Image 1 (spheres, helix red, strand yellow):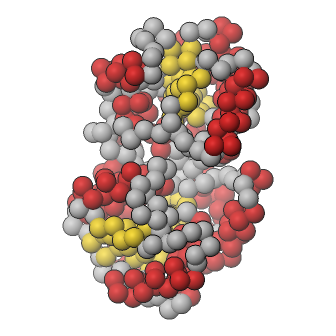
Image 2: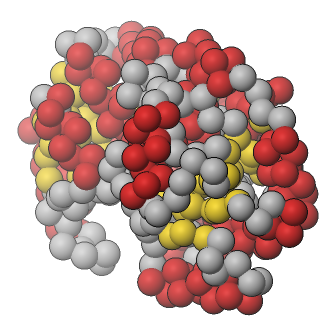
Image 3: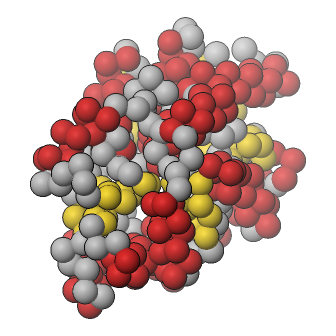
Length: 374
């Protein structure tokens, strides 16, 4: 079986992370895997190259470089003749549907991650692209959601239920593992010591991550826990960063927050946390919660996507957009935490790379066998 993955870039992101993990895992099993990218570079490119996975740059020049870019991609598909083209996220999924319409014989597999989108937070292209994907979804041979909530959301919005399946994310539990010594080094690098309670979060600075909710919750937390520090790892548009800094000032917590930017050694970052918090408006199955739990870190999350199923009785779940509930959950977790070993074991059993690769390979093999390809 020959698989061509399609993604916009190999910058930091949940979908990008899962693509890399899956591509490496399949390649290790001897599957012919390559990854086509709109834009070259990105930190995850090094991970693929180190594993021996071929990266194919498509040389997209800018956002509106569409027609020439599409024909370059189509020519690549004609040359490579993959059994499966596996794309991730809305725009890439749409492109593979157009490949199908243009006569491509490969089986098209879509990867979808969201379980809710507030399109009012984005420009018009996001809404138009999603609506187009609803219409074009019948051209996908298979649609893989990383969460049950995501599958339900997409079916409700017109995706074909009979072509949708759920395969949860998986992570490298060897890489993401408890290591308090290195966590202390991260703390020192941030100017923090072992006595301070670190509530951490990891994710791009994006409206869907609802950092304003976290800032408002922090203002409540520090009233009873003045030693608490909130550390945020992720990048985003400068305008949104400035907005978040202003919001910290307005709520009296500018010194409570550390905006640490994106880091490659994210496994070390989790080990610096006492608690991991996710305040999002919408998720599928959040990688950051899985990764933190693999490091034995207790988590507090909003009740979005499959977060409730993931945390089960090992974390705190609160409604989205409710900073008071979020603050109360953080304070409760500070008083009583589940055992790190139990948190980690749940991830090893259900969300390891091995489980992800095995489930995905079986699903793709069944797709090919059902249509006579191998």
